Image (cartoon, rainbow, N blue to C red; front, side):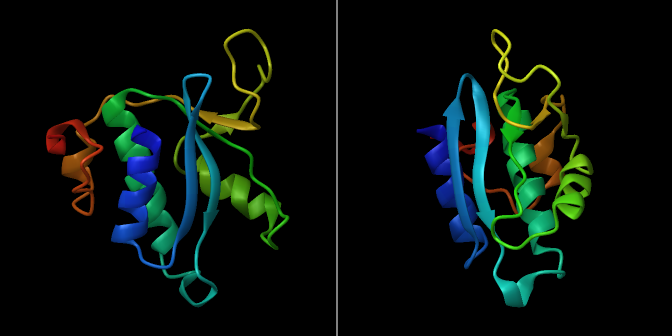
Length: 129
């Protein structure tokens, strides 16, 4: 339920962004993120990812994802983009307790909401009712 609340928060904060999140094997799985074509290259994707990793850090939950070029993106650019947010190649794919996705990011101990003024979501502990 938390992943769905976070996805809805992103959709509200960043209209036009298509996103799908879930919890899988204890990880926050970023299943899909699509930035509108007319807003690519404007920093919107960076702001959305900052929002997501901030929320994950506040929860202390690792994130995982599978970059893909099926929607026309350049796979090398995607890998570089996600690495900027601390994602690394998942060398333990499928091992006991590890995710199956290609990239993983461990949570960081930070005051993420304070670092991300766009985050006013109810999914973050400071804003939860």
